[in-house]
Length: 334
Image (cartoon, rainbow, N blue to C red; front, side):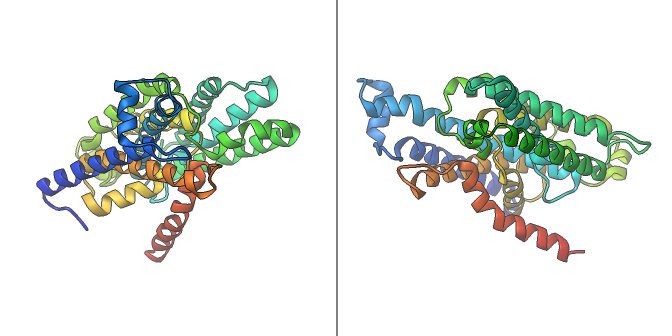
């Protein structure tokens, strides 16, 4: 279903935003302790200190906001990565962001006995940034400069290296595994609103930056030679994409841990509906990413109730068949 006219695209975008808001409301209401819309409203208009009101204010609302922000950021980062690398399976992990963040957290727990979740967030953001910058630096070596193939290979190499280091540290200190396992699986459970607020400037800047370069992304998607012929400074736009991906994916990993497949699945769904114009694909992907992660988080509460499945596991269940489909389609198209 491809929306061809501008009016239909606006209707689709507004409809998706409405669905996202409904899912945020459902995220606040449903769970192990079910509440109601009235209770959720009263938690902010007539707070009485009840268990339900405390849960809504301190657990459910932060969780819904974090899931929406992280889902939107990962999806937009996926759009940018797929356009930059010309790889339909590219995602923030292509930059080694997940692996770098995971290594930073595991190293902090193993070597320095860090257990504070907010410290995890700071360290994971730094690890993600270092990994992405290193990938960019390696991918820029040589006469041709930064190319999609070199960037993809550098990202794969860095991801493998950081993953090996992480596994090695966990083997040395098995006790650290229990402390970081839930974070490494990717989860929005137990995250406080102040963690989101601490990274909101970076991901907010990433959202704005992605929208500002959306028109140039259309030119870049035509190919390197065509883009240069049309006067696009491809080197500058590639660096800009890298910075934006670090802000979006690094901030997301800092809050929720490494959540996979959102950045792969959502861009393809969005293009099938909105076409290839990045001025529409980027904002719609943000909304769809939020919808996917909110829906996955709600479903994760009921599979093993009263326990919860990490939302990263849920996105993997949803995304793996889609990943296989995209990979097979890409292979068969050759």
